[in-house]
Amino acid sequence: AVTGVQTCALPICRGTERAYERVEVPFSEMLHFHADQKYVTATSIDGHEYTIDTPLKELAATYGDKVVMPHRAYLVVSEHIDSVMWSHRENKGVVRLQNGSTLPVSRRCRKAATAVSRINREGAQHEAT
View 1 (cartoon, one colour):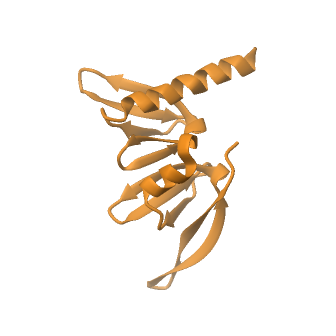
View 2 (cartoon, rainbow, N blue to C red; view 1 turned 135 degrees about the horizontal axis):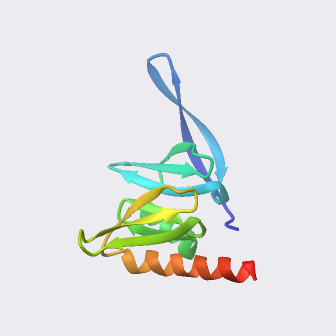
């Protein structure tokens, strides 16, 4: 299991203004992170989304091999990767997460995502025996 707490800002709407309440969400509850311009959205296992002010590169450096970057705009908690599918015809791919959702995989990041997927499958097979 992944340890550590990532502080997130959960947007709460009050009337027409947006206010932010600071909450602490354990990293072990995170599924993936998505960067869009200057904001990073952290998505938890249960589907909640949090806006955080930590860049993806900093998250990657902090959590090391607990995360993988399948695309420059995404960072995925490694233990949640199920498989990586690549279309040679279209020259693009997706990473499938254990909850069934998919995220894009870039050519540059394909090998790392595929390696994590293989490790997760081998671990699941080993646990089943």
